[in-house]
Image (cartoon, rainbow, N blue to C red; front, side):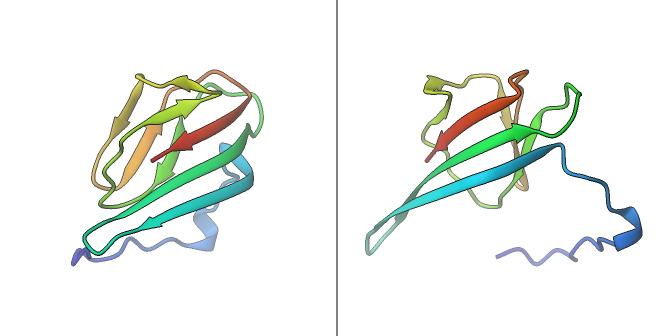
Length: 96
């Protein structure tokens, strides 16, 4: 769990999201020492732009990322988010 001061998000700073997520399916494999989560999402680009897909998430260990059933290599991950470079307007994203 992070001990950093949370970032304040104000309604006045709101902007429409770059991508819309229409469907999410989660599969959990529980174990005494670790939990494995597989996420499957249907995502659509919101408007005409070329910005990357950015997903929030902390303390994630990625084992695989598939975009439209193809292995993804053009991505960046840091302690706060996952950024995937894609020009597709609609994608099916699977990751573990």
